[in-house]
Amino acid sequence: MNTPDCFLYMPTTTWNLSQKAERLRKEISSNLDFLIGSVTTQGVRGGFSLTTAEKGKTRTKYIRAGMLEEVQTRIDRHRKLKELLKELSEVNWALLKAKDPR
Image (cartoon, one colour):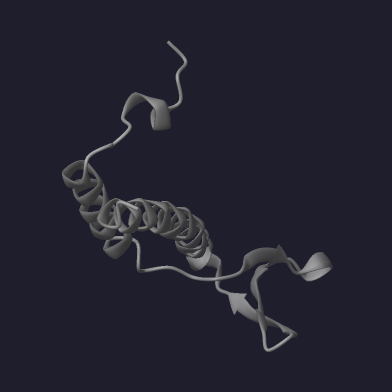
């Protein structure tokens, strides 16, 4: 069955929501070794750079040859972290609403 994961488990009780929030917090804490930015190539010279935006300016940092895979892994962790934080925010909102039964 091709049902998205979000429909397989729909926490409805405060206890279930709290458990989900705790799971998300643990997953977030295990993804804190991250980098913000993207990998770009350096044209004809070859090589790669980590490109980021700082205070409205583009910054590039050279990536040594053996570091490319680790840099990409850490960038992927940042993307995952953003998704987890969004999901935790939604769970926190549901918990907050559950506390105020109005």
